[in-house]
Length: 461
Image 1 (cartoon, rainbow, N blue to C red):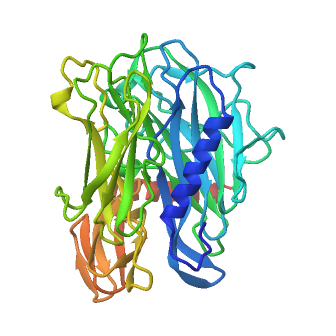
Image 2: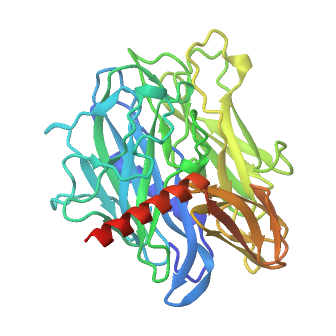
Image 3: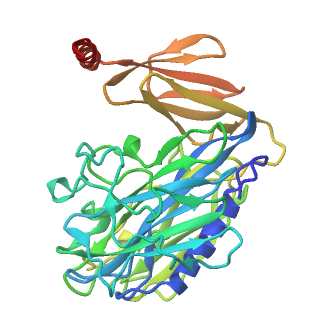
């Protein structure tokens, strides 16, 4: 995918994921009838480093998404999955982990085993792993928020634990550039789940070790910094889960992965799956699309689209758009036309916006934003990536770690400071910014007490 010397190619990655999802659909099997319902992909990015040379590009170190199969009912065993795409300059090692919806547990048996698939960069379809590396059961996860501090979307009905699926022979799966790993696992729900309406969903996270010399050693492709308590996270690997007491009767919109396709500098398609629409007075699905920092369509225009075979069976709806600006972050969503719902009940719509970015014009001037943390904390950028077109407004957010607090931003270019967080940075030149963090007083006292205890113990010895 990413050679390490060329800009990131999101269209190529989407095509790879689209072909992979299709191959999995054809190769996999499950007890439920339906299709895979996959959530939005989460991307872990950083600068590409080869040896001691800093290459002027941003790589995708890993892509992660989760999903489930079919339209299961209470008590019915159904399959869920977590998929990890290993990309970037030199690949990576990954440990995928999942958090189950409330009232949901694993249902692993000889009839419904854990299944592991691996697709190499040059393979047209995934291969079921039969070499003994696929775990027969999950391990307790290592995700930083597994200890109970992770905010449960459904309250006390959720388990606090993530569950990991490392290979049997070692703690991490090898992910060469372009390789995609998928773990499928059977689960069963003891109660009805309504997906986005009642915050019932799978969560996915992957612990990544970077093969890239000089790159970060350990990173998590997860989303605690975007997860504002209860409700659907605004980004990251997640998927609403729909489990019913009986045959599902309400109209429903599900976002497949990838749900944004064929994106160029000026055009692209948005795609959703629609179920159970026979109660609609008309079969109308509305797509909304805007620049990410606006609520108006700007110059973007709808140029065509269709919904195939709407009815109680599943169907695909897509919209084609033109008028995009190059190197721009866009947001979009789909919903039913309220005037057509009539007497429909149990209407399921995910109203959160999905994001995608158009590629830059080849040869256009770009500026780099290097953001780092001084102290116990981290930094996120929106749009992500670190390389931007002229006058792009980037929002930098400082995220304190445990026992730390944000102090200020330090702007290296002009030596100025700001206590505003998040802070906006206009990219009219390459810039470097540093988020400064300091230990909270209580944390400092605890550290001091721990050091004093260690010194006292050493003296007694």
